[in-house]
Amino acid sequence: MSAFLKALVAALISGVANALLAWRDKAKADQDADTAAVEKAANDTLQDTADIADAQAENNARDRGGAADVARRVRDRLAKSKAGGSGG
Image (cartoon, rainbow, N blue to C red; front, side):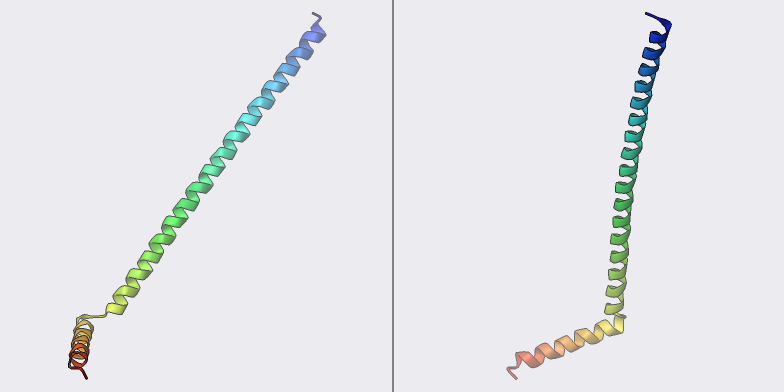
């Protein structure tokens, strides 16, 4: 085999090997990007869920009011139930 042919085969093999390595590296980078996107979406969803739960808890606390409000509502319900129970 001549030196030219050997150099040509070596260059061809080297080119193919480099192309395969570049393809493998790109596939790995794409997979890492996909994984990062999924993790970010999951974290964003967890954060949104926590924010919604916090807002609901805040609204529930605000709706309940203080002890005086609770006592007033209990008295109102009791009065309504007595008025309704007398056949009125």
